[in-house]
Length: 129
Image (cartoon, rainbow, N blue to C red; front, side, top):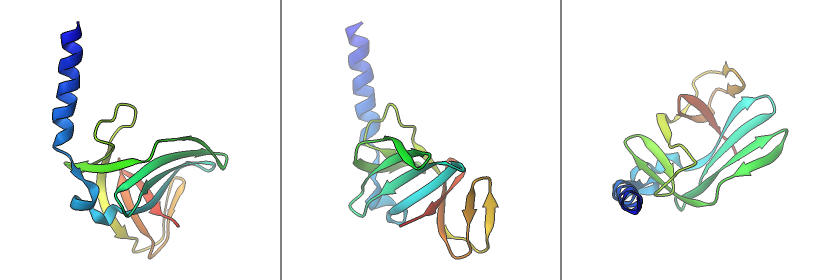
């Protein structure tokens, strides 16, 4: 049984080594990005200028969960928080940062004309300060 544990750990390490740092692959992703899942619930994906960051989850204007600050990595159009992640699913980059050409309301997210946004897991994340 122990051998399976070692094989699993070794496989994770080998797979995680092929990831590139976000700064070297996609510096355009640097920023603070917000997606509303309800009128009073949202998620912040924070990518700092040094390549570190975290994810914060809010309900009723209060943070209810957040990750530790780790380095962001990318591989095959996916963003990973840390080299090996178990609890946080990687984000699939559906669309890299772009500027909204017109105002658009999609569920609880509003894209205003001229606003910068990205799509992660086919959801819009608007840049905020």
